[in-house]
Length: 542
Image 1: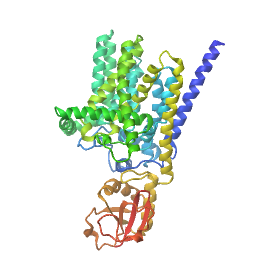
Image 2: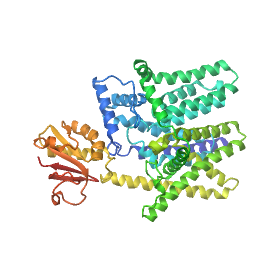
Image 3: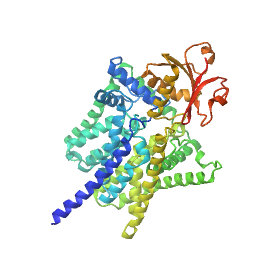
Image 4: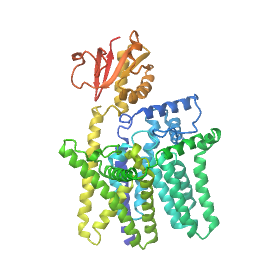
C-alpha cells in the first residue's frame, strides 16, 4: 500500500509538471506564425537561409554581427535556422522553430534544475511561474540569436553541477551535454563568449584539486573542450583564413568599453545594479517592461505620479530581490551541510557574480535587459530562496507563498492578455516593432496600390526606414515587387512613374484627405492612405 501511495504521489506531481509544460507550450505557440515578431535582423536571417538553401551562398563560417561592433559571433545560430528550413521549408516562422523548441525544453529543464535544491512542490511552483513569464514567452516567439540562451545556460550549469558532484565518475552523457552547451552558448552572445570560459576555468581549478583519478578527470575535461571546439569549427576556419581578424575585433570591443576610473566606474556599478533589478522584476512579473536600462531616467519624475510610483517600486523591488537573493545564496551556502545542495548554491552564486562583472564594462554603452537572458532563471531561484527564508520553521506562512505566486501569475497573465489583444486587433506595431501578420497586411495594401508595377519607391522618416526597409523588401519580394529606397533624397524620384510610398506615423482615425502632405516637413502630396495601428502607409502622387 505504501509503495502504491508513493507511486500515486509521484504521478500527481508528474501530471502537474505536464500541465505546466502544456500551458507553456500553448502560450509560446498560439498564433505563432501570425504573431511572430519580424524585425530587420529576422529579414536578414531568412534571406541568408534562402540563399544557402538555393545554392547562392555556402554555409556561413561566422554568425551575426554583435550590436554596434564589427565583431561576428559564431555561426551555430544560422546552422539551427538552416537545418530547420531544410526540414520545414524556409519561412520567417520555420527558422524560428529552434528558438521555440529550446524555450519549451527549458521548462522541464528548469524544474529538474530547481529540484536539486528545492522541494518538489516549490520547484513546480517556480517552474509554473516561469512557464507563464511574459518576458520568457516574448523571447520564444521570433528568431534571434539570444533567444536560446536560457536553455543552453541551464544545460551548462546542470552538466557542471554533475561534474562537480561526481568528478571523474560523472556519466559521459553529462560530459557530452556540457561540451555541447559550452560550444553553442559562446556563439549566441558576446557576453557568453566572455562569461562561459571564465566560469569553466574557475570550475576546472576547483575540480582538479579535488579529483582522485586524474587521468579520467582530464579525459572528460578535454572531451568538453574538444566538443565545444568542434561546434566552433566555422569560426576556427574563418580565423585561419583571415589572420584572426574577428578575434582582433572582439578584443577591440572590450578594450574600447572598459569602465573608466573614479566616478564612471561607480556609475557603471549603479547602472548594473539597476539593470539587474529591472531584469529581475521584469522576468518575474512583466512589470517595468522596457528593454533599455542604460540611464538613470527612471528616477526622473515625468509628470505622471501613478506611473512614476509603480516604476520606482518595481525597479527597487527588483534590486532588493537581486541583492537579497545573492545574500541568501551565501547565507545558505555556509549553513548547508548537504554537499550537493551546497554545490548548487555555490554554482549559482558564482554564475550571478560573474554575470554582474562581465556586463559592468558595457552597461553604460548599450545597456539592454536582454543582456541578462543568461540569468533568466535566477530571479525564480531568488524568489524560492526568499520564500523559504520567510517561511522557515513556520508552516502557517504557506499562505504567503500562495499569495505571492497568485499575484505574479496574475501580473504576467495581464501582460499576456494585453499583448494578445493588440495582436488580435493588429495594433501592436510601433516605429520599431511589428508582427509578421501586421507586416503582411501592409504588404498586401502596397501591392494593391502598386497595380502592375514590379518596382516601388519607399520613403519615410529615418527611424521608419531603418526598421522597415529590410522587412518590407523581404515581404514585397514574395509578392514579386522590388523595393527601391530613395531615402530622403526626394528630388531623385520627382519625375518617376514608379509608385511611391511613404511609411511614417499613423493619422489614427483622421482621413488623409484632410492633409496636404504626409506627417513631417516633407511636403509630399497624398494620393491614398491607410492606417495600420501606429503606422501609416501613404501612396504619394507622382
